Every structure is written in C-alpha cells, then in structure tokens.
Length: 148
Image (cartoon, rainbow, N blue to C red; front, top):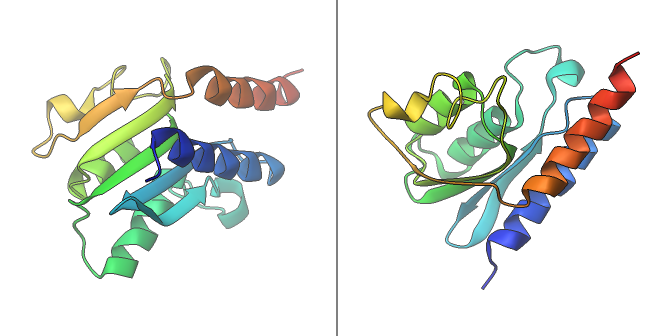
C-alpha cells in the first residue's frame, strides 16, 4: 500500500515539470482507493489561463475520469498551501482530505489568509507540512531566478 510520502513525491515531480515549463512549481495529485487517478502541475503560462493551477487541472481531470462533480472518496496532495480559488474548488469537489507541503503566508487560503474551509459547507481534513522543506526549496529556487 502506497503512503503519503509516495503521493507527495509524485506531486513534487509535477512541480518540477512545471518549473521546467517556467511556471510556478506547484504540483497536485488526486488519489482514489490508494491509486493516483489524476495529477498536474501549474500550466498558467503554457495555457495563458490564470485558472490553470495544478489543483484545478487535477480536479477537472479526476471529475471527468470518474464522471462526477464530487470527488468525496478522493484525497488531494499539493506541494503548496492552496490559494482561495483552489481551496474553494477542493471544497466544492467535496474532496475528503487535503495534504499540502509548503505553507504560503502570502496567498495561502487554508491556514493563512481567507481560511476558506472555515466558511465552506464542505471542510476536508487538512494535513499541512508534508515534505515542507523540499516543497518550499523548489519554490524559492524558482523565484530566485525571477528576481533581479
């Protein structure tokens, strides 16, 4: 049986692929019955779409695959604390559990900022800090290359 370390490492692989596409390196993986059913990295720049965050892309694919708007028997692994848009999508999809890596004091909306789940009808279980330093390091490295 695969564990959370395995699934977060898959998310980290997706984040690294996003980095290679010159997108903010965030990866998301959706699990159902202990199997990966969907994964994605940010594609905002590639698609010219401000909503093409890893979580949104992974949720869309998973919902299409299982032919349901509700992913209530699924878990999501994300390398960065989700923003408000992604947090709301996780809630609306009724995902049962969220694991995330790095905390995001500026744009995060789970532990920081608007704390979407405090006001949502569906509140998934949240486990933060999974491979936190590894997830944070990828982001910091990416943004170092963007600053002058």
